[in-house]
Image (cartoon, rainbow, N blue to C red; front, side):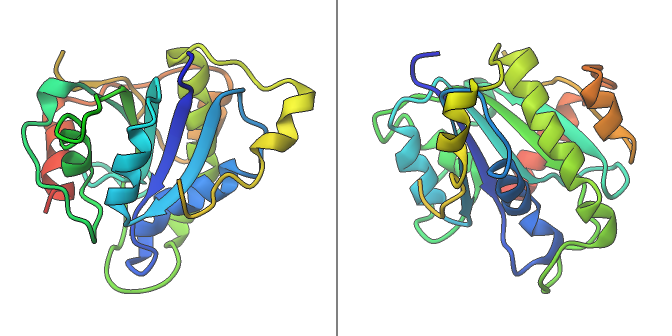
Length: 215
């Protein structure tokens, strides 16, 4: 993949579990990543993410709190295609994923292959720090991102010489939607380590995420 892969942690650190994506991005920076993978914690800076995507990445993996009907801490993987997005107005001061992705064509870019790795939040009211059940899902989400990079995007772990180059990349810078799988419980980390994809997210679940995240 010549353009590489962008892993984008998004969310608001001041809204409890909404900061899930940022925490996963921080943890990913502490591990070796395949060559060509860049990890960035964008927080709520949607404009920054949109302009970084104009660099021509081959794939995007968004990590975010993913509201749904499951239990807090459940993890899921969703795939996004152009037909899922419709139109959205980019907010220079916020982070609405559907608007960010829908705006790429207007900005002269194109939507890359896109996945969302999400966690069902327990609490998104004002407050700092993740709830215990969501904090416990962070390591599983890190493994899940690696699973997506390996199984869906065909990327392998970096060579030893390249590992140090990937550390610290969480700097604050920069078809219908098909569910690929993975609704798990507290044992998801072990499931992912064995390369097993469990469950299927329905299209309504994915649409719910986009609708809520566009508000």
